[in-house]
Image 1 (cartoon, helix red, strand yellow):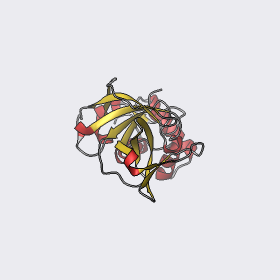
Image 2 (tube, rainbow, N blue to C red; image 1 turned 90 degrees about the vertical axis):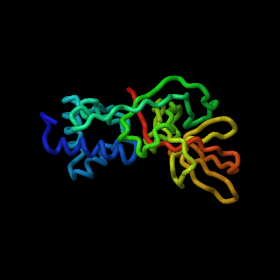
Image 3 (tube, helix red, strand yellow; image 1 turned 180 degrees about the vertical axis):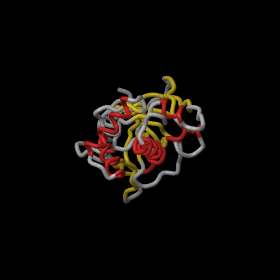
Image 4 (cartoon, rainbow, N blue to C red; image 1 turned 60 degrees about the horizontal axis):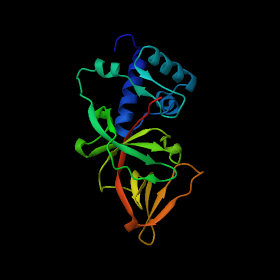
Length: 208
């Protein structure tokens, strides 16, 4: 990566690895902690990388997005994955379950984890109930269709023919708690037979 300092190269590699492992970008504070520098110093590094065209960032949380230029500088050329965008999903007040394909989104496979690309779909989020998990209104979440759901996973759930994004927690009495990540919203508790898990969120895209 010509034109970058060694630390900036390491920052880019860490952002890429973090996204691959966690399905979202690190915050500036997490980067500062990783590299043991002040947040003001890390902000300067991020701005320098943005000025050089290696990433973009907004004022929103976890909004760092690596540019195509990063991929082009790697020794291998990984094709982007095409994922169907099937509709909108609620992360606040429920809306009708999405049923129609609205288009496609493209994602670097390194950010997806696993190799079962055919079982992925994308949904657009409405609402702020998952704000503190870094999922904001207007974000596009990438969902892997799976029944292998663990306690605390962020899932897309279908309840009464409506969809919502929440954290999944088994509850006593054969029930399921769908927990928001925003104290302004209350958890939803349903009988287990009324909750149909559509998949687990594995990545996120944000446009601004």
